[in-house]
Image 1 (tube, rainbow, N blue to C red):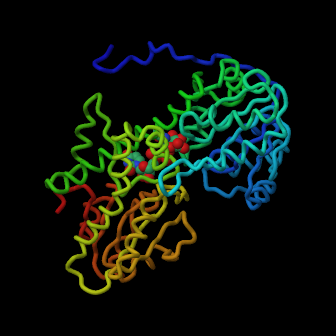
Image 2 (cartoon, rainbow, N blue to C red):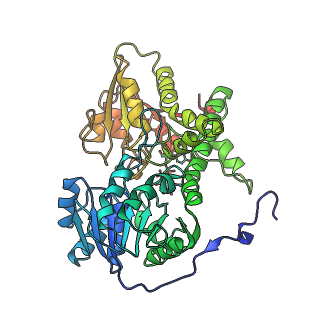
Length: 445
Ligand code: SAJ
């Protein structure tokens, strides 16, 4: 035992050692989004016959031409090869197959409850195509209990004996948008079957391309594990954001505190920011709150802390521009939920812009190289900052690392840059005559 850390190597985890060279399987993937499409292409690239199914005809038509509708490095090449080889086709309805993978969205409703309608629809859709010996794997992140309480009752309409004639389980994806193809292969994976044979059958399927460890467990543990992984990050980001606000008030640089505290061998403070976006960290913790609202207090407060960051950023903007009368022009650089991808889902910057829209004294313009259509989007960065009083670095896209400061200085009305990601070079910016302000840095005042 090392300190209070359990030595995970001694944990009796169920590793799936089977490396079966399966004869090439036929796989039907329900949902061709950020997970379903890369997963389909990966199985196809490994010789399986894959039918990708989606309700969006635009996605189907694009895919059958070997084109993709999402931005993910190298995915276009893999999809083109898969389609050209004839191993990947797209359709609006399922086909008979050996395995059915459900990778459809599980968003949250306004009142923070899991919207399982897509999972229900996809499960209903495959029932007529199920045959003895098939397997059904739910990949969509779902509240613990979903497979047993929601999916299995629908699958029983097939007349097949669940767990004997039809193998069922949950295998959540853990890929990081922007690194999906590499992580699909190399990440460790969890498979939770409704029984042992289901876990083993599903493990054999994923062994076709997974090179990471595969750990077997029960279905409810697998469902809980997935949401806990993202909840762990969300709670830790909330701690960093709360510390940022406290440090602003106390005249301390939270970034230096985090950097130094993390020199401790067992401390891993996360990074403050303008909020938490994405269809994962901003969503999954609510699935636990829904199941145990009386107990999930830290989890719920963390979600509310992170969701409050756009309002905090706006309060800082108010303070920075308080001496400017009339219309205040603010340029927002980046609106996606994280850098170097085009995903806007749950983006805190979209929320910040909506808050500013309600304030008549602000005129907002936006520039994000990954987002082509937004109502305030300027055609380029200089147009976005022309006449501006404040530039907010909202998303740390690589392309923003070295801003065209000389050109910006020429066109801005006031030369102020507010960095919400600790991404820009303070000395470089101040050297060009700009005022540089950093979220969470009270010593910066
Ligand atoms: N963020 C911070 N501070 C940090 C880290 C992130 O403010 O220290 C913000 C980011 O700006 C972003 C949000 O959090 O707005 C989420 O970013 P992320 O990169 O942490 O998470 P995702 O949603 O892109 O991917 C996560 C990953 N889960 C974990 O790292 C535990 C990924 O492995 C999952 O597969 C994915 O969720 C998912 O689909 O569940």
